[in-house]
Image 1 (cartoon, rainbow, N blue to C red):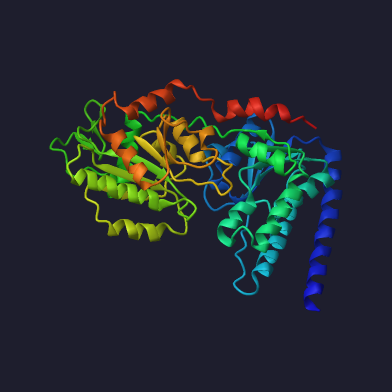
Image 2 (cartoon, rainbow, N blue to C red):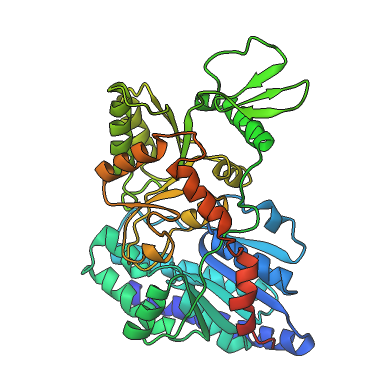
Length: 466
């Protein structure tokens, strides 16, 4: 008897809140014409770069923006300092530790629905609600109801499919996964406008979901660019205070010269140069989860270490792996057990402003992203290309929409192939005539569109002011 009473009470509260929300919002809209947009992420705002870019572009186009989601890590300063953008943080509910899994998910969904409703009550009426999917449960349904009651329009930005991400944990035939797929497919059709990240996803949405979407490719923001040598040196010295991999292995004989592992600066002239015989800098980014198979990179580094030990003419290698996640400490222990001599692995968590500087300072990027649906693209590669950083990326279904093999980088299938590519690319390092620098030159000459320029061409014309 208790369970039906609780469900009835929850549904009654939701209905009352919706009615109050609708009445209040319509009164507010009658009082003032709104050019306000809510950008919603049921995830960490600081780790949602595409939605940050949406918010910034909307603000540049004259909208006031509320950026709504979980505030675990800091978004970019450019967003925090924008007078047109306000951040509204949600409190993330931890899963219950007791009871059936279905009950745990049910309670979490109901609480998040109430949180979203209350957030919309507190904010200005919205002309548009931009929603990231995944996660879309319960956000798609809640945002659609709010838009219906308040006269706004729902814009769903499809980054992937939520049910396919759940399927990595529970298996594709699990009842929760099937329920999530039904919900996503049904509620996804309720939006007024759909955006997606690849043409492959656009076609899949049209053919299998009956959803018409517009492809909006991820593009690098303006701050992703090649880093001047003096800024590289500043970053390396800063990181060297914390991480030994960035420090020179000896002190300079001249006290007027400052060394990092890669650069040296003469304090008399201010001139910064690369150090002779410097190591190569490889950068990768991962969420330290099983879906991004770090073991591929670790296996390739082992083979690269052995090549140097066998006398191959290759530079020593410093591999920087950024990100945080549940398996980070597990893999850190595995790295220590390898006892590398010619390869150093560093796993820092960087400030948002330092990450693009690091990418713009690196010699090669490695992407381990594997899509759960096969239909999205790794934004980390977009950022690397913005810095004219060549990439080796693990292959999957639609990667060709971003990485063109032998033109702006290389595509690999396993650790053996990645190790071969590292050998090929670094065999002439740092010769400017080498293959690695040819890829960089191709990226420099490609004149890539930046995010806001691309956004104003593709998204802004779709928004009709109300």
